View 1 (tube, helix red, strand yellow):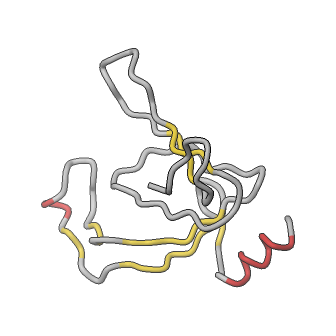
View 2 (tube, rainbow, N blue to C red):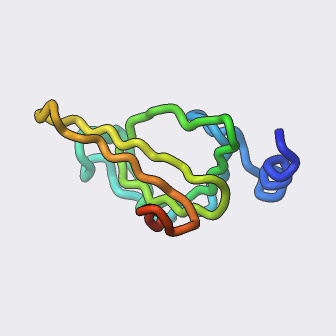
Length: 113
């Protein structure tokens, strides 16, 4: 593990993330939405909002996984990160987008979304 990565993991008390990389929860709202008021894909109460730091070191990856809620990504440092979005669609020619997250705006790249 590169020294810089180890320093970041130690500095922010990051833990291994189940899908790969490292994380630390930085915010969890006090209020929740009752499960009865949520769509069927949720089986329990949900907090209004949560936030985490997430570190993905070179050579590691975040395993494909299905998310139930919207996510907002902020990119702070490192080489460009590719986020693949796979959506269920009846159209067999549907193109699944790949978002490029990085800090430099060039060659058609964009700010993190």
